[in-house]
Image 1: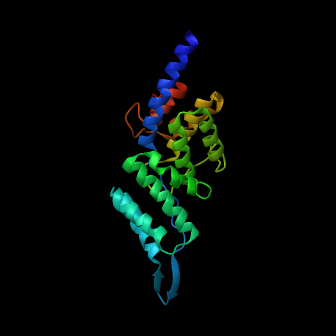
Image 2: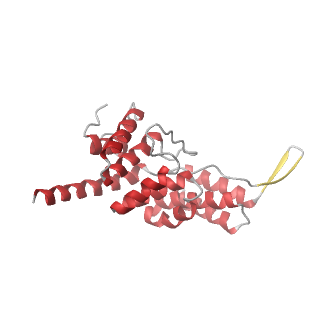
Image 3: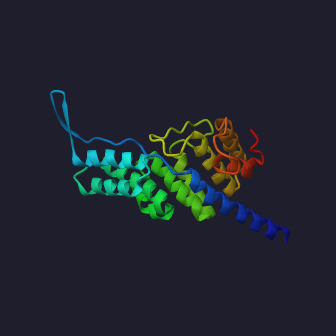
Length: 220
């Protein structure tokens, strides 16, 4: 009976956790690749795809996510490089996460996750949202490919869209805690707490929420 009550409490905490997590994981993308098709003297000529990619991220920074989505879709419609295609899908993933939720971002993170570290974080965020243990392990395995399994790994997103090193390690803490790897969960939670000084968020949100869930102390 106590075991069932404990499991119910854990499930409730996890549900609250992953909902809060999406408030903190409006992720960043890697910089755009290529786009220059020639140079003449001091003039540089850019492809339409390059221009739209730049526009997409400008619109994203301004919070005009519908416009950003339109520009990222234009990148895919124009002749583009493989790097630009990946970048556009990552942009679409994060813009749609902001607009309508991470479920609508899934197809874009799927297409980009093998090539882009920030898409991997986005994919891990989606898997966390499912609250399924097997998906948590997939997220851990994916983030391990970029070295985020190590507490001393420094995660540096390319764009300032709400993700930082503290939040990346908080994500790892949550994933490890969910699968029962408490030693690693605590290591990442402590790292996240250390990096989140001084805390820039109110209690019970994002990093502080996860630190509290894992080690029971988010006092700074």
